[in-house]
Image 1 (cartoon, one colour):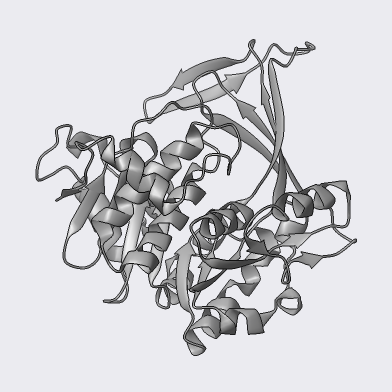
Image 2 (cartoon, helix red, strand yellow):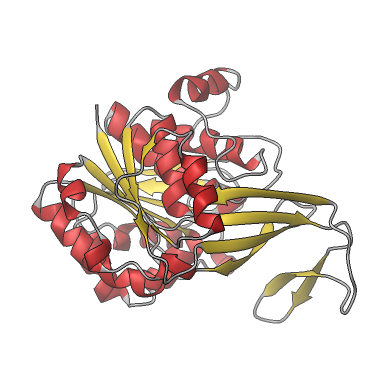
Amino acid sequence: MVKIITIGSATMDVFVECEEANIVSVCSKARNSNFMSYPYGSKIDISTFASNVGGGGINTACNFGNLGFETSAIFKLGKDFYADGILNFLNNKNVKLDDIIQNEEFSTGFSVILVSFQGDRTVLAHRGANACISENDINFSAIKEADFIYIAPLNGDSNKVLKKIVDYAEENDTKICFNAGTTSIKQGFEYLKDVLDSAHIVVMNKEEASMATGIEVRPDTRTEKFSQDVIHKDIKSMLEKLKIKDYQVVVITDGGNGAYAYEGKNFYYCPVFPSETVSTLGAGDAFASTFCATLIHDGIDVGKALMYASVNSSSVVSKFGATDGLLNFDEIESLLKTRQDFTYLLA
């Protein structure tokens, strides 16, 4: 069985929805921005409340375990009520807990997710222990024994161990799936390039890819119709710049617009698999880890991996929690059979 280890964040998430919340759009000459607003100085009744476990390290570990891989995870918790809840949650998942770090000097990560009536969300995040992973915390022998390591975004000072992890994995023939986050991207492209140089699969969202490459998608040249130009030429330029080595596959996700990929020969586009949207939290983690898992499971079939990732992420957004809607490979395939018209395009 393929062994995968994930590293990333772990949080206790509290979901809150209020009927009095408003979406306010503010326009300027340069851009349009949307804000979630509440009546100032008021006490507002909560219409929907739920708590769940989340974070990139947990979400992806749960997905890999659900997809049938031998999975373990590295993330850091405090020794508090929230840590107990996270560990109890993982006892019911196919995830080994041997490499989890606990330190009573730090509080466990905690987030309040404000859900809008449109299904999108604003996250108020307390990073806590997630931002404090040190080199001494990491069980490097577990990385050596794994076939793959999935690196979710590392926050704060935890990002300082990123290069050490990548170098060690490469030295020990552990393949790397890298989901870049803003903390590492803000270090500059030359820094990021050293990490990309070792990664086999790279996933970013469009905003992160733009920040990393310095390339913006120009609205005056955007293609509106599906054709051979279904992928904007600026997105193609991002994909080409992010692909450092011949063996790499690079993916850029674009929210409700779908996702794009490049393996050096072809550009791929996959739309969003249709589903009801309850909350978008965890969709990116589900997409990225399912894409990686499908390539690992079935070989380099980029189009199939995009479709599987789209189906699994669409299932996640149809549920309130970040892991509640995760599907296994058989369930993904069954859903695809219900939509024979759903496919990817080459561009």
